[in-house]
Length: 372
Image (cartoon, rainbow, N blue to C red):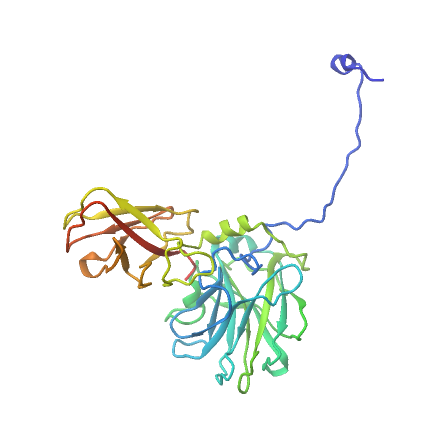
């Protein structure tokens, strides 16, 4: 047999076989879309379950980075029915629905979409992309021929955002072009569909969106909608298995775009103390002396976010709660949200009255660095 001193002395050499292991595991970084497993929506700023909303004010982000919009004009006030539902294909526990409320008569096109940030879009240049997703039609799906529209849209600007993409602003994406534009008939059974771009992404494409939509007909029944799940945009000419991620990884990715103090599934402006930011002050703050509050973010944001504060006791925006009383922060007292990519700094100007120690100040916040 081989003795230890033989190995140390170099008298024995051994050659071991090379073993190549192909575990068939998906690459968790290959999907350019974030948060497409709707069973794992760690931030989900507009709560679980489908809800009606009115278009014309802004695109509505329902499930982390996915947003919905109706029509192509801010004048279109058609109600939409969107959000996450427990209807899902094998492998996940939720899908994203788009449809009309029962009895709705608007015939405006309804969309669910996600924008890929420019820093990632650049890496697609010169590559052929394949989009895949699961979809199912509602029992009263009214689209002619059961058709949904499937688009991959490119632009030559930099993170011009959802408002410009949906034409809800006066500007539109620079150099907007359809890299993929097809229709697909869907059924009342879960089916996976895949579409490959006919040409590589051009060298000038610097922003990109995936957009799934349908145009209803007639009057909406109880389930005039379609549900999609597990959307994946990847490099290659064929769709591969969906890249499932750990919930912690999805949370990290989503927090770059949005963070709020509300608990998962709780709508902003909800009256709740769960998750509220609370500071206890042991020193009296006199009128005219601002109070600065510092809240570190869990993850560095994509850009310095826009911030809205909410009262935990009334839900009203631009309110804070001092010693249990919800106070409007109007005029000179509007908090200065000096947020950076790393932290929210709230400066309460306190121009009206003194706050005698000890006192507490509490608020909720929504800090968004989405591509708006």
